[in-house]
Image 1 (cartoon, rainbow, N blue to C red):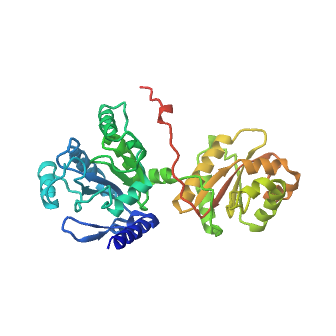
Image 2 (image 1 turned 60 degrees about the vertical axis):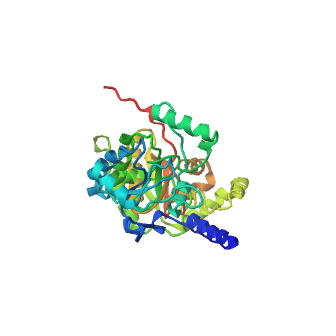
Length: 378
């Protein structure tokens, strides 16, 4: 019997780890009925483990305010009461729901009580924790300092584990079911709201979702899509409408393969170290080459052009990466002259940068951004 139990546990772990998004999970609602999270496809989600007798319980009021503000934009809060932290969520789910509606007038959905840690943890929460581990408390904040001190007394290495630390931990999920951020109960609701706003606004969410992609499928981008992307680019602003750029879109696969062969011959060891190497442009099947005046100027305008194209590509399910290294190789190597000649770059222009573009074969995580570099002068 014990062996069977461990086999079932192992199978559940494999299924959880193989999940591609939260839509692969079922949960129980407050009536005990199974609900597929696939019902929330296309919604921005904030998933929260809650408690009714916790010092953070007043966050219900802030959560309801957030829900009322953004529900019309496709935002949902999924509430999972949990009694694992100080026994602060006692009673049945019906009693919990009655308390929350009477005291905080909540209107977002509450689901059946669950465990978020341990051997009985909900598979959904096993997945959430695998996607976003514990990032630490802000110990410059009084509440964060208090939580850090309390938990460190219990376990000096508590911060090295991904488990849920306390009630009102939150996970932000994008419209395509990807876990994009985790918030601890001490994180400020203003910061959470800013991130929610970024996700519910389609322009802002597209900006936030874009990553530099360095692995692509072999499938070339359709010509019609490339035309739309370039049109988005040339509609970028430019000083006094000079439009100082020249754009060349490479769809010729042989042209890319031929110049890659030159690169391969002259960078043998580097190519050998990359087991996935296909071409010198991060393996992208298509290229967008941007040129600017040879005597200088136009770089700012060309940057605006490129960002427009990369964001347009992102909105169409494509990946991009802005490349400078291949440009230096092409310009410095006489054997690559045939490639540059095919681009038909006028004599008074130079190749500035290349955008690798294609269908992505990876989903890179966002790199940290240093907000301290921004100062508001009032």
